[in-house]
Length: 457
Ligand SMILES: [Zn+2]
Image (cartoon, rainbow, N blue to C red; front, side, top):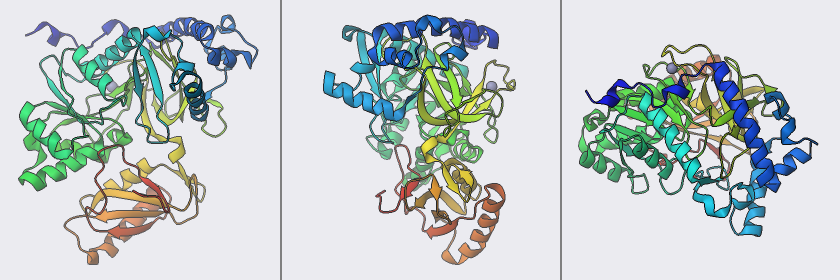
């Protein structure tokens, strides 16, 4: 047995720290980080000045929560201002000198202008460490081949993820989805990976496509791990079951690209989900706020709120109290896997929340409900609204594909079943518009579930 098979965790010292120890470490790092941001960036210095405080006044997390939030809109403005002043969108928010910045990452920019991250070599090392912590926990070891079927380019799940996999000694095949589904399938056949990293929607599409191309089930591909990324589906039991059965693989949900917020779910049956373990707490301070009032919400079991993060021990672009717009649910009870620390589930974007007759609904909850009815439905759907949310004039219109084995005459019965399920579980009575299977394009990138009238697919 090789030496590394004995080790359960990548960084046992940090990953097994008690709650109190990790909080103490965070506070110590936070004090240094705020002083660093203040010293090195007029943007962050101003955050202290508007509330009349100085880094040395920050002695507790409570003191820190008085610093104004950085919103996505503010970030967009800062990026525009930076572009005008420095000729790039990140210099204004960078705290390290230009010659120390070695990599620029960005989000895929599904909701407007991409978010840019500037990293020094130190930051790149931190990101690599976080990826290693995640995959090591799931049992991936040197010698294992992992195929990366996400959008590559400079998306935070692209190159940083590949480097992280190499860092822990496993082997990455960064095929990417840009070359199309057939190419990904061909490369699986050519490189025999044991694990794949992809969006859950793409996973579903691969299962359908492989059957169509070869007449065989996707279990034939020999994948043992399916790592969900880019969409919340990896925390949805129905989606997890579909992937687990379709590939014959263990399903993990994970998050974290080229920045400091990283999490991974534990090894558990697909019909169960205990949240993602927050594995980067020593480099990321998490806070929760109410998405409307921006009031602070305590991080405890069952809490739901918009995430706010602050990078710790970070040099390049160390975000401070950044409200990115993702909604999290917290799991704080001890996990059955025995690992300490809090866990979370990403339940959607704060901007994707819809309010129908006073009931709040996220597309992810609608997806969960629709997936309950597979294979009578394909599971592919769109929500159609008249104008940008969150307020929706009822009824909410859901356009969805019926399953391959159904014909139009079967639909009234199915619709009745679905309607009563939606009323009972989600407290909404949507209007279903049926379309034949494979009406919607199968997304290779993040799927946009909400369409505003007049908007193209
Ligand atoms: Zn666990």
